[in-house]
Structure formats: C-alpha cells, structure tokens
Length: 126
Image 1 (tube, rainbow, N blue to C red):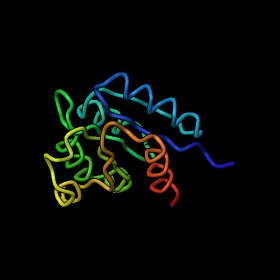
Image 2: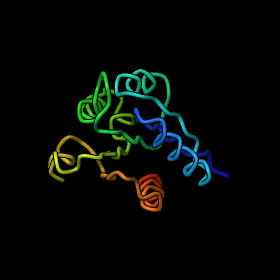
Image 3: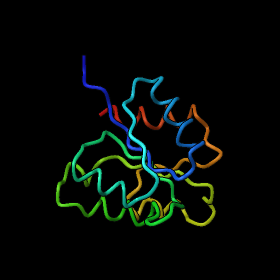
Image 4: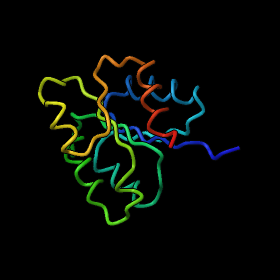
C-alpha cells in the first residue's frame, strides 16, 4: 500500500478550505490547510507534499507570489511540486500568466468538486 498523498491547501476562506478538505479526505488524501502563502513557505521548509492548492487572493502573500517563491526553492523536489491555482477572479489573469507564474492548472470558484478531484488525481498520479 502506497503512502497517502499529501495535499497542502492555502485558502483564506474557511468554507472553501473545509469543503475541499472533506472532499479530498474522502478520496484518501492527507490534508494540511493554511490561510496564506507565507504559511505555505514555512510549512514547506519542514514537510513534503504531493500537490499544493493555492488561492490567488490571500492576505499577507497571495498565490501568485507564493507560486513564484516555491518554484525558486533550492530543493528541486519541493520546487517542482504540482501547484494548482484556485481563483474567483480568473478574468484578472490569462492562462498564460498562470503558466508563466508556475501553476500546473487553474480551478475557478465556485469550485467544481468533481474537477478538483480529477485535477488532484491527475497531478499526483505520476
């Protein structure tokens, strides 16, 4: 039996964070949740994850800044972890801007939870 896949969710909305947690736990993922990008970088110093889900609009450090910092990490395993953007403002950025920043995929709010599971499964089944 393989080790459970670890998901780090960075989302300042408790409602979305809790729904995503419940849905992914039901799919046997191990979930850690934080409220901003700064906390993502702090926890990545100590732990490894299979995938990161980053809200774009968060306090302290937003998802765009956070993904750039993760991609610049000296540890190549951590720097290359799959990262998915979660946004309610997809129109503020082009698909190209998300890709250039370092995201593997984008999920638009309101979240389609079937799509969430599909994307997380695709990006963690390597």
